[in-house]
Each structure stands twice: as C-alpha cells, then as structure tokens.
Amino acid sequence: MGRHRTPPRYPTRVTRTALGAVIAVLIAAALAGLTTTPAPPPAAAKHPTTTPDTTPTVTVPAATAWALANTVTGKLLRAGGDTTGRYTTESMVKPWLAADDLTRHPHPTPAHLATISRMIRDSDDAAAQQLYETNGATDTITRLTAVCHLTDTTTVPGWWSLTRVTAADAARIGVCLTTGAAAGPTWTPWILNEMRHLRAGRWGITAGLDTDNGVAVKNGWTLHVDDNTWHIACLAITGTWSLAVLMVYPATLGLTRGADTCASVAHQLGLHATGDV
Image (cartoon, rainbow, N blue to C red; front, side, top):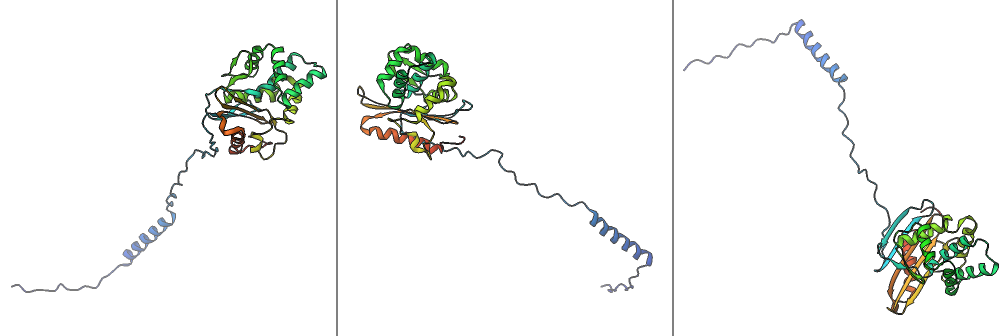
C-alpha cells in the first residue's frame, strides 16, 4: 500500500490588485441592480364590456299583449305577450273618432262638441256610432291606419269597435293622439283633456302608476256573448310614453281581471305619470 501524503497547506494570499478588482466587480453589480428597470405590474383583470340587462321582466296571462312607445320620438320601446295577435279596440278607438271628426269639421257647434265629449268621457256608444257613420264608417278607420302609420290593423265594415290591432299599433295610436298628428294643434289639447277627465272607464293602467294626475286614458271593455269572453283594451298616454294592453279571457274571470292585468303591466314596467321612460 502506498503511503498517504497530506498536501501542504499554503496561506491564501490576495494581492491588492486582485482585491481591488473584486471590489470593483461588486460595486458595479450593486449599481446595476439599482438602475435595473422594474418589471411591469401584472395586467389588470379584464371586465366584461357589456352592460348588464336591467330591463324588468313583464309577466302577463295568456292571450294578452302589451306595447310601450315613446311619444316624443315615436319609437316602439318594448312589447310583450302575444305581440303578433290582433285584438278588438272596443271603445279605445273613440279618441280617434273624435280626432278624425274634428279634423274634418274643425268648427263644431256646442251641441256637436258636447256629443264628442260624451263619447269620450262617458264612453257613449251611440255618440261614437254617429261620428263613425258621419265620417264614412270604414273610411275613418282607413284614415286611422294611414295617419297614425299602423302596420297590423284590420277593419270590420260597420263596426268601429271590432277594429283589430296589435298592441304595437294600439301604442302608436296613443303616440298619434299625443303628437297632434291625429287632431292637429287646435283640437289635440282638447281631446287629451277629455281623456284626463273620464266619468266612465278610468281604471287599469293608471292604477299601476305612482299617480294618475295628467295621464290621458281610454279603455275599451265588452263582454262578447257569442263566445262568452271579455275583450279588454287599455290605453294610457303621457307627454313621454304611450302604453297599450290588450287581452281576451273567459267571462267567468270578470272585468276586474282585465283591469288588474293592465295595472300590473304598468307596475312591472316601473312607469311614472311624469318623467322619461
């Protein structure tokens, strides 16, 4: 076996030149660390760019349609239920009969004006029939379609009450009445005032508002004995919106069912008697 030899130990020697070089390297590294550009912060979390839909959902029974329009722009804002169905206007069409008559006969006698007032405020059917026949019967409904830009309205010869409209067209009638397209600048304020002071049929949509002050209303309601159903048409208009609610349902449910449904739609939409929609 060979002899193990421990290598000799020598003291570590660092020359001044070497020490200076080491120190210079360390200082350079430290300075480099101070001037290093910091890393960029983490990217901000991305958020959805779409606005959450806060539009209220409106629930209505079957065979019910509703539509809301802006009376300033004329634009249809929303519609729901049976949007393609046509429903009878019943007495809801009476303000148009007044507008058409006063446009064609702008200087009525006091007696004739009283007849028109009675048709609107008391929902007098005989007065409505008189105006309907005087102004050409079906022709007056044809003018309604043209003047108010209705798109899905049909007529039944001899029957103003059986004029069939979609909810969107019914809301457009409200716009037409409010803007003056129907009756012109002279008679529009008078007709709207009559609609604000009903003695019969002031129910429905206004019951779902914060107040009914200043809201013009015309409702139609008829119990059809041929099929034992209620036909209900509610219309309410303000300076900013027009809301129509139309429906048919079994007679056993009573008129209250229709009135409550009209009020419910207005309430669910969150409408107010004043202010923007």
